[in-house]
Image 1 (cartoon, one colour):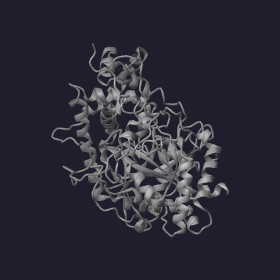
Image 2 (cartoon, chains in turn orange, red):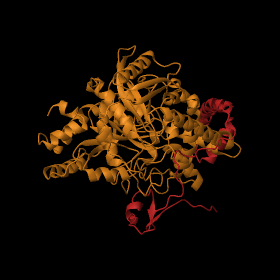
Image 3 (cartoon, chains in turn red, cyan):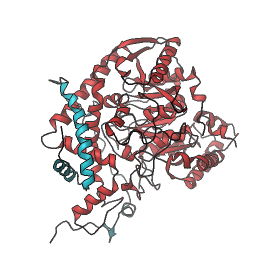
Image 4 (cartoon, chains in turn green, brown):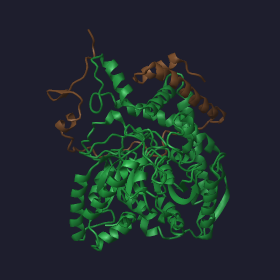
Length: 492
Length: 96
């Protein structure tokens, strides 16, 4: 089998399976051959599950033969290691969960198993999803397939890199402040964050519970819509999953953009933005106009500049509470030097957590502590209200908003690790959407050539009203289908 | 906004994080500059603005009170760092 088969979209591969031109077992074996050939350079997986994957593939082939297949059946996919999988080790990129084998499946995994998917493994990530580069993993940094000395983006680093380098047809990620859209943009694949409440978080290892949402990394917008269709909907085990109907996304995805009102918020073209990124996004907007969209560049979301502070108070505050459960008693790494209960618990957390996780627990603990709670946490929650209101007002006049995903393309590994604040600035254009709980998608919209000659992908962000992923997919799909960026693959 | 080493140690204690002297040094600088950055929020007029805890307008979500199968006892204990007689073994809470 040639590598070309591994470069297909999920839908294209599913067509081959249904036509009997290839079997799921063959696709799965080819995927693992590819993993053995390139993963050493990319480090996209923490745990591979070849044996289970081949068993899933054999079952999928039977379903396909029985005429009981859907586009996910038999297609190899990666799952971010923040999503628990019964019987398959799940670490969240942390040493503190190194030996942890979940005893139940996340709701999304139950749904994907019903659809007959094939899980090739658990993808590498910034520890507990805290990071924008994939460097904060206890299992080593993930490398960008477009330029191996650069980051693939994060925190869903391995998911994006695996899809970009044909080690999976698609992958699940999770997005708290941009952790699916940003690696999607930096790795040249489609990154979808659904509306907060669209997908059950049951079984997603918690980081910032008011922000976390499971999303997808795919090679096409249609694949993103199809995977979302499979995992969306209310689940009683997550009280924040919303009981509203999930529309048939693929029924409207090809409806085009004619007459849609597209707003371009000026605050998203920030100072210090790379000129190639700006230019690529401006060209993409012109392309949408050519396709019949009504572009309005006179849109302002004045509180955008405060979103970074709001996020880096709220998310660490929630994290400091969520991560209190890692005490070395019930599961995971346990420090045992014969000390007192407190000494061993403090040792478990000192040696089990990495530096960025500790930093955020400290920020959150401080922001929630007596005397600072109102000044930091409550203030951030109030500004969060303003950010949401500004989006609401913009969506009275516009069907979607479009913007860059990141101010720059992929940066070098190690370039920003010594300066946490500079690292946080990567998220400046993805965080506002998370704070407001909106759906957002990143679509490849061009390339830039770095000083060292590396050719690096750029992403376009499409943002929609809450629970209106359908319109977002229409715009993203219309743009994607009018370009050829998705036909390009990394040199790896 | 500058955090003293003692303040950093106090926050680490509240979070039950063991911390080395080297970390105290590094974190006090880094956390101070992050907190400095947050100062910009003070310019935002939030008088009369209610806080948002999360982006949905859902309250008091209820479900039917039905019995469901629960996870097997032995499966859960299999992840325990130390177990004894079917229980999690923990360090002594009360010291002599």
